[in-house]
Length: 414
Image (tube, rainbow, N blue to C red; front, side, top):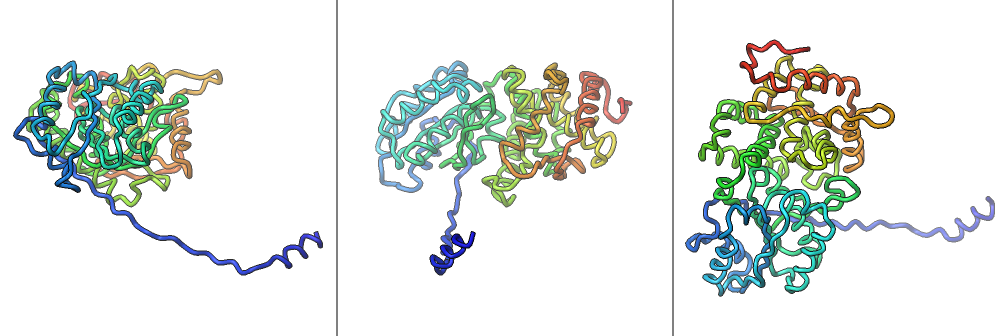
């Protein structure tokens, strides 16, 4: 010990710390339009020429196969558009079709295929990668764009309700690995988000309804007036009233953008994730169901579960849980799935592991968003397993019955 002390004294020198500080502003346009690839719509050309108006811009396009099934004319429309503005945009190859849904971000071969196309087409940091599809495809292509050449300009063209009103305007990209959603990913804002309402009109009913869950979620934690608007216009949304759908998508996107941009933690360096209200259960249910549950369907269940939990925890007034379930069922969601009752070898509910995965994904202190009012979220740092079980039991009892009469008249268990 004496020898060690002597060595330290002999080698002692002045220690200095130099702090490197700089800030990087982030901004990107989120456009709402119709007929994005119509010859007379300048949005795409103007977006790609935003930084370098006189330059010819190289572009590679990836499209969700499901979108092409619904709109088989789309690849030809994209080529015709690029041909019409050839002095500004060069389409390097025919649009590349990728599998629809969660498989696009769960299959390593698909990720490799995207990487290979970007490499073989010599797409550099002044070129563009465009993804046209739902949230899963945007995540996968965005991940490749963010990691190729340390960052290629990525244009998102969301085609689902969920990707237009939520995930498309975010700053995250990711792929699934080790059985966990978004385990491998980046924080990398897109170059632009171009929302074309025309894509919503050709969605299957299940996909269209699924995305509304994220609007309910963000309204519950941030905007009581919007939540009440959703209640008042639920029938219009179910019947796909164009004006109602467009308002819902735009307002939901605005709330998500405000939280990301003004919430103080856009890259989630802290422990709170308010926009993931209901998601600790939702992500786990997606995995347990092997993705037979759509993301929005799982979110609806997770939102119902955490709303009931908020009542049991004494945070939210009694009856608010039934009110939320009434809206979700009116919108067309089934609030029960048998995976809620799956147990492991110790008898513990498997869905509860979602809390551990939720914390591990971000690290730090466990932070779960609950409700103290309809439109007001609150953060908690522990979850009572017995109350979770009681919330699941309550959902089992009321699922499918809440909507049989207005919530104000319904006497529900608990």
